[in-house]
Amino acid sequence: MKFLLPTVPNQVFETSEDGKASELRSFDLYQDDNFRFYFNNNFEEVVYNSDTYQNEQGHSSFFLSHLQSVAGVVISRFGLHSKVVEVGCGKGHFFSILGDSGFKELRGFDKSYQGKDGRIEKRYLNRSDLPLNADVLILRHVLEHVQNPVEFLNELREINGKHCHFIVEVPSTDWIICNHAFWDFTYEHVNYFTEESFQRIFEQCDITQVFNGQYLLAIGDSNSLSGSQSLQKSEARSFDELYSDLSSHSSPLYYALLHGSRLWIWGGATKGVLILFHLLRLRADYSLSVAGIVDINPSKQNKFCAGTGVKINSPELFLAKVESGDVIIIVNPNYEVEVREFLSGMCTKSVSVVVLT
Image 1 (spheres, rainbow, N blue to C red):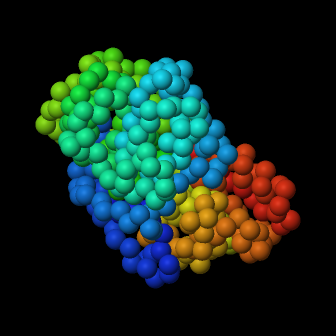
Image 2 (image 1 turned 180 degrees about the vertical axis):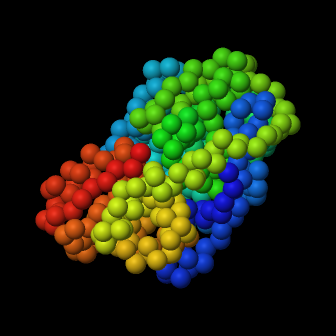
Image 3 (image 1 turned 120 degrees about the vertical axis):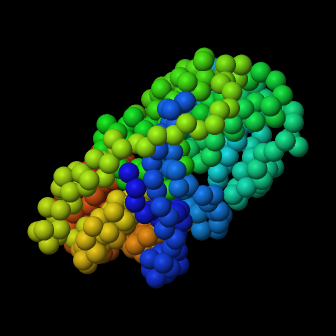
């Protein structure tokens, strides 16, 4: 499965022209035969601009409940007395939840961190940090960004310097396959993991589906971590049908477009940006029917998205622009209840709602 993608779909731009001119790179999916994870064979390192990269999802009450649930797993499994290190803590939202929960020995690392929590160091973890002496190493939505992920985990084990447990959260490729959600294949994710992947990476590993199945949460024992191995790659041809099914799996989009309806894409993160990107590459003239993207993240609002340059609107601005007969596409079914509650309470126009799965 090979096509072009915006390099960083969660990057926002000041003008539509800048968004349209943003970098595209080649995505070509292969599988590692040793650990059975998929990876982009054409991947090259992505450099993030912390000022324009906006991937925070914590503004959603549904996502916040997910974070609290994962924090609850950490507490129930390891206790508040454990020394916890979060590797790649982003904007620090989950880290703050752990701190508020009562963890006393808490440390974080992320080069893109923009807050003021002194426990988070604005850099990457490296061998100068040996020994970390953590009981728990947390990697939420980190491992999918790292080339040679098993080698990376082994390096973290060495830097930690003692027995520990890894808590790893990643998007579920099993969910992508089941739902034909090809728009979840994004360039900035070099790796795509399944439950089988973690069963091979750790001999002792508990794996659960979280976030309504869209994510995997794996808890692995460092003593059971497999050694690093060279990639044994084979082409992942079975995924080609996901991309070729665009027309059938986006039939609500086509129905709306054929009947002259204006489209609003609700969700300006990876899913929304990429479904719109694929749609407009299929038919550039569809851009005339796209009214805009809606997102509740203030850092994205009044900016323009990668690949297409479509404007990202606040819900309030959406209410001022929406017209009767418009179609709202909810790109992530997990947020359907939130969006429908907002529309029923605030939107006075007669609109249709379509939920993509």
